[in-house]
Image 1 (tube, helix red, strand yellow):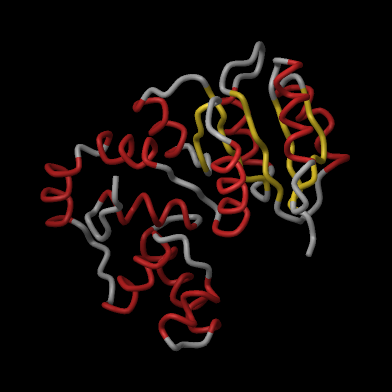
Image 2 (tube, rainbow, N blue to C red; image 1 turned 90 degrees about the vertical axis):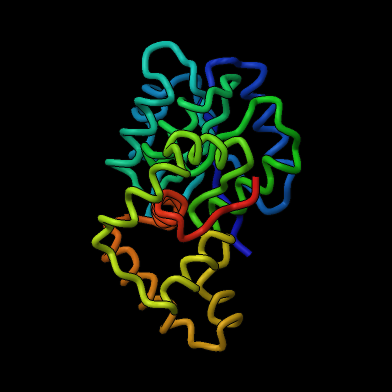
Length: 223
């Protein structure tokens, strides 16, 4: 099995170096580089990146280019890099802002090792990892109970029952292969439905589909 390549971008030297040691101690992971700033990372990135999916663990607060700015650049120029924000700030508005800005996950800096491992694996596999803090921030930000009732009446997107079922599996972090097995369909059929969902909703990835499902009431995730 190929190891999951991980970049670490954090201006706190001891934390960054300790996190590198921790991640490298896990058999399935490999630190491809650690950087003290967003600008240093962007400068070296063309020599480090390939078409393979990568994970970037990004601190929110850094001098110069902060996590918000770095996430925006990576999303636009290096979409194969999935960003996990690691921050001391657990502010619902900020969390929702970063998720809507296409960050794949948002973790507290004092999260435990097991959750960090789970987040990296989930983001690499499905493109997102939303824990309880993130889900609550998304739902609160959308003012869900009021917005859903208003939005569904004007929503132009019409999903078939099968598309709704597949969307629910996507929200549960199932891969195409796992959805195919659960629904007794071919993986190619599931891939086709996923493409149709992206096209119908205007979303660009699985995380976007989850946001869409929560916003419009197609799926309510447990909090």
